[in-house]
Image (cartoon, rainbow, N blue to C red; front, side, top):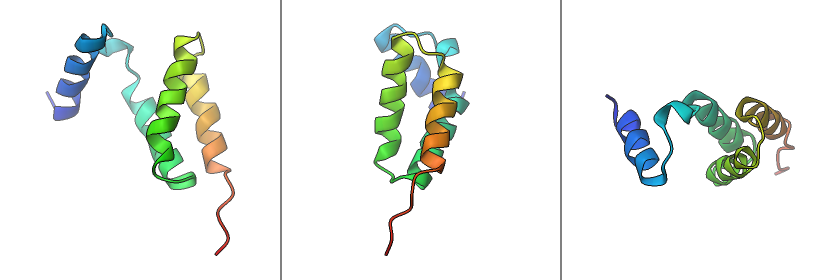
Length: 79
């Protein structure tokens, strides 16, 4: 078991979330797209926003796809 897997099991147990309910690749891809497309601190905040949306009934894959597309189309700051 990797460190990430062990963390997901422990953190999930702490919050009453089954590891199978965690779309790890989806969340990591979203964090990557947001960190590179917007700014690094946006990655964990965006993951939290996605979690709120999913908790309110949004489909995780759809929410992640929409947020990734937004992040990848985000305008780059001009120097």
